[in-house]
Length: 172
Image 1 (cartoon, rainbow, N blue to C red):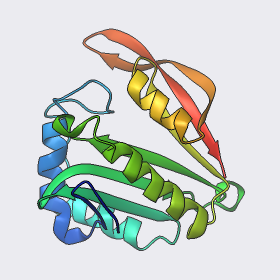
Image 2: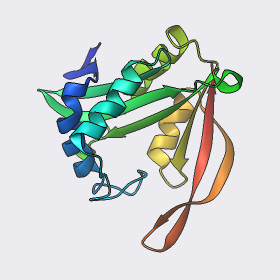
Image 3: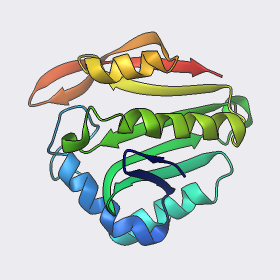
Image 4: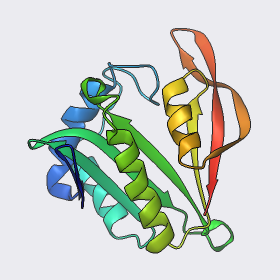
């Protein structure tokens, strides 16, 4: 889709499932900002292929891969809801490999998801949850227009310690 400092953003396909699983198993151990930790991403290749196909068959959802020199360095998705009463909404999930943090790749991926949400999915609200101490991500989201609308108390439990998460919305 775009090329920013060597970052190529493409739509994920079922053929990417194995590489995505490898990527997710790496990033799960790089930080505590994700919904899963090291060794906790347990989908099989077939399950991941099915998941990707489901997203690709939805008019209001997309999964994107960010690649540098053919290596996956970011995976992101925007999932729109199908029920009529909430079909104007979608939810973003994003990750960037730690060695590529601070290079603008997260911003580039987010902008592509937001563009898809506005232009293709025709969403009115995009939401996300972010760990309350993930200041860099919060700053990125606020710079893109997201606003904090609430706090999930004890959203994460990591090593028997609780962490809150902020719910943030972007009104399109």
